[in-house]
Each structure stands twice: as C-alpha cells, then as structure tokens.
Amino acid sequence: MTTIEEFAAGFREEPGYLDYGRVGPLSQTVLAETAGQNEILSRGRYGSIERMRAEDLRVREAVAALAGFAAGQIVFQPNTSTGLMHAMFGLTGGEVLLSKGEFPSITYAAVRAAQAMHVVTPTWLETDHGRVTPGQLREQVGPNTTAVAVSLVDSRTGYLADIDGIRQVIGDRLLIVDAIQGFGVVDVPYEVADVVVAGGQKWARAGWGTGFLAVSERALDHLTPVMSGFTGTDATEMFDEVAEPSQSARAFSISNPDCVAQARFAAALEEIASVGVGEINAAVSDNVERVLELADEYAIPVGSSRTAAERAGMVVLEPAAQHLTALSASLHNHGITSTIRPSNVRLSVHAGTTVDTFEMLRAAFVSYGSAI
Image (cartoon, rainbow, N blue to C red):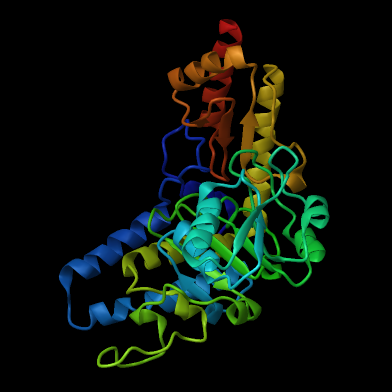
C-alpha cells in the first residue's frame, strides 16, 4: 500500500501548477516506468518486444481495478475522443440525448456519427447552467431515446454528475460516460454505465496517448464495432482472410497499441489503486476547500459548486467581466498555471498541490485585490 503522503511526494511539477483539468504533469512513478520501458525498447534484446505485449493485459487489469468492469470488457485507446467515436459510431438507431455544452469530444462524436452513419440522431438536452442532472433527464428522455451521453465531471462548470441517479431515471437506455475529468480522483459507481471512456493525461498523470474504453455486456449486444481493425478480432492468423470482429471489447481496436503508453497508464493506475481513490478524493477535496477559502477571503465570486458531492478537483472563478483581465494578469504574474476562459478562470487542484502553490495563489489574489 502507498500512503497519501507518499503519493503526494510523487508530484514533480513546479509550484504554481493548478491546471490538472487540462493536463497533469507526469508523476515520478510514470516517469520511471517510461524510462524503463524505453530502455527495453531501445535495446531490442531477444524476447523483449514480445514481453512488452503483456502490457495490454496489465493496463486492462489496472483499469478494471478502478472502473468495476472486467478486464475482458476493456480495450486500450489512445485518447478519450477515439473511444467516444467508437461508441457513437456503434449506436444502431434512435436518438442519443446529450448537452451542447459537453466537451466537444462528446458532441463531435455524436454529430459525426449521425452524418456518416445516418442511424442515430443527436437530441440536445436543456441543462441547468451546464449541469446535467437526473431530474432534467427524466423530463427530457423520450420514447425514441436509445442512449444518453454525459461527462462525469463537466469541464466548464466542474460539476460532478450523479451517474447512479441518471441510470435510475433513464432505465435500460445505454449510458455513455466521458470520465476523463474524474477518473482516478472521484469514487463513483462506474459499473452503472454501459460505456465508460477516459484518458490518462489529466488526473491520472500518465501522459498523452493513454486511455481506455470499457463496455458492458449489454453495450456489446447493442454497439456495432464500425472501426474494427486486424487487432479487433480473435483470429490468431492475420493474413489470407478478414476475420469477423471479436465478441468482446477487443472489437473496438484498430491496430497494435503503443506498449510504452500502456505501461505508463498501467503504472499510474496501479499507484492510484495502491493509495485508494477515496484517500485521493479526500485530499483533493481538502485542497478545493483551501481554494474556496482564499477566493472568499478576497471576495472573488465562485461559479462552481461548493457541495462536495457535486464537485471533483475544479474551482471556477467568475469575477465581474471588467475584472477578468486583472485576475488573469495577476495569476500570470505570480506564476499560476490555470485555464483562462472569456468569462471565468478554472483552477484545478490535486492531492499533491503544495503549500507553496497556495501561497503563490494567495499572492496573486492580493495583487488582484489591489488592482481592482
């Protein structure tokens, strides 16, 4: 087991980094795994390349330990968007209900699938300021709705969706969850979803080129593997004939994966499992509270939820429009890395966010207060 203190010690980024919702700098564990795998690949020692193929099972088992799906229901993906494309293009009819405010990985996948396949229709959900709730879905799910797609954590509001409540109100319709903004830092019942997709470059701190697609048995019965390559079959011989797609999640594979990326992702998830998502979530929640306290101290309006059950690691600051430039400048001048948008600032804390970072944030807020 790994303690939360040991886990936090593996954060290598410079003080002032508050942008895990955009990308999480590589952890010490991932950096060491990468170096080791690259060394193996660079040597090309007899049998080593074949051994690297075992990283596929390793990463699927690592995902399974956190997601509640069996390893056979999981397939490695290079990113979240590719996994969502597999899911949306695989829908075989009806309407998929989703919000226009979702991160574009979801909306583009739904619209492109409709344009190309002509079998599923995106239906736009009216939300409560970008928040997708069970109550809204109950009112807007229709007789032709066959699937519902939602972000586990909304990238703009930081809102943590109640996927268990959503499952209860949508019945047996397919539930597709983009989990990238919460996977590894929030403890939720992923198994209530039919499709779970996430990447490892944010909160898992595993770097780009890492991700997964998990599908329930019911989803396998309802999704067509439209983009299924030679690695998406159960055939042992790849030449002379084109085999049918596998009956497992493997069907949603196109080509040989990046074994080094799989090892990076597996190492990151194994470390998370050794600490426990609950422990990490508690540390993240404590750090969110510290940001909220600082925002309140300097009278900076907060647009994201203050309720622990409705948030993950993001705090959205919404100063008056005429003050946004001053806040952005103060954060920049004090070395705070954050996401600046036309109407707000998003700060993303993690379990390893340091005291030095909070002191830098305080200094930025002091300067902002003086400027306005």
